View 1: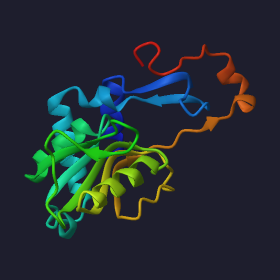
View 2: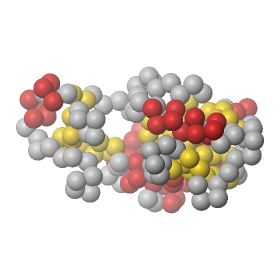
View 3: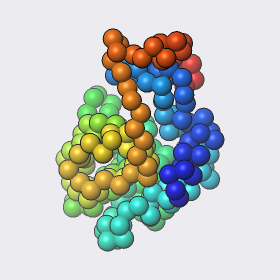
View 4: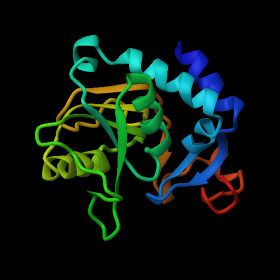
Length: 193
């Protein structure tokens, strides 16, 4: 799948939005990515997971015992990656602020894990999820994500394989360009974004 085809998938289901967005970080952007929209179609989610699988080198794919993803954003793509790889998929939750396996999920000691996320921006939550897998007895051997928004800067301490890298400028409150100020501000999540 080419970058143009992936962007077409994102735009085709209104997952890649354009406008003026106030991000949760407090910064402003002319773009917002809502990966849940691209994953709501099971056939599309399956296609994207298969394409993402192909980004992972065969020698790493052959070592994977199980797929783990952090809830909420990683649930669907993690499940689809499990299907594409023919491996079980489970997820981590943060019931009290720290990632942990629940719902009867457990890792065998030394299990080799592929961590899967929808979007990586800073890599901070990925690092927290990788630490949780260690506490649970597993070893994350690689991470995969639909989108890398870190401009290649995220370092999770394991090989990282994104389907696509997207980088959009963001601006602090006092540095928003006039052209962006002219567009009404939307806070993602406040109006079905």
